Image (cartoon, rainbow, N blue to C red; front, side, top):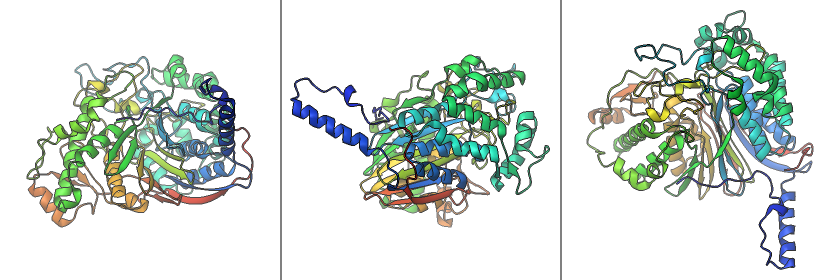
Length: 589
């Protein structure tokens, strides 16, 4: 059942606590002293040392997170920094023009989710991407400003800094501003995605000037400078949320979008709010798992799969039976994803039923170890590798932790930059169900619960996850489009088996998402014997030419020992460091 805690970010003010009048004066005095000491313990003095672990998809983001910690920030300030730097140095994966989910764990064990998911413009309609015959218009929900939802990341960063951080937002954004202004040398992932999306980028003068070199994919060693984005970040740093959703930035965004055929208005930006929600919580095999709540489908799907698996002794199964079982629980969870899930603020989701372990029994009633299940046919999945999202994980020796998955959807999002902003817009509108049964770019289908509606947040697969065990805390997540949830499931099972984070990020992966009815798998995910056994059971197996995902993981052992690992499929950086604070925070918690 989802947790219902809403944790304040800062040390509680003694004046606001409901102390009963009948308490004796000495007791009240002792309570005030305890609260004062608790508040003082959150201040970081110059020279104080602590350990932290950060694993992110880019070395510059990991380094910037430690920079903020060394400046006196707490782990949540560092999360703001890492998010903003990824927005600058990985424009193919995330950005201020996109959104995400941030799972935050305080040292006292309270967990909360910040929902910075994009939402549909108020002028959006259910048939806006369909032709007169009701057929999807090719690429209309992928390229250009009409494909963009209202961004959520800037509002989420401002909210995290205000409620959970210790430093001013301007200090946490300083590394991102510096990198946007001074530039950095792009990596091969950037060049690969720029080539993949060159046509969409070239169609936007603002994007072409920013991300291409005279209209072409930049050569190795090219330095990307984004002065307009630096100025947008500076306004966000100076004015907080209103520095993006009002004033000059908002005017430039709306004017640029509308001039290119989009439907944004000033009201769309003014009304956007990041939302703090209770995460999904599920207990499995001695683990307590927290993951993203709707409008992410990740937590619900993980809960269903873990509840189904809890009915079996996995260690007693053969290798083929175990893989068969995992495929079948994936199939069933993704079916429910398509049937029931959407924006919880606009759609009635039967969460209580979906998260009930008894419901899992009904899902596996027809599961047979003698034959594969069946899903109705659909065209092949065009999803590709699914690296066009990003993730970071972090924890400190005190027990604070953050898992965050951020996205602009497809590589380089919509490919559109409103002039003067430097903000690359998302194409998350493609994550809505344009029509029941019609797949999006990741092959996922949906129903009425995820139909386009004004102001609605589109369903997501992003699944930042925390796993509490008797031995410690695991922090994990990954990009990967529709395959995110099954990658995280395999990581959770590794944790249950006692494996460390290096194993979670390296293991070979396989995936089933109900439709298309096929098992996609990386090279080496199945042995030759397993492939034969699964084919005999009737599974349709689809080998992938390449690997997928870019998992970032951290482990904090019970005594405080930290480990971090970055997926070798990507170019991220994972580090554990002892932080010595160089300066006092400019404002207290």
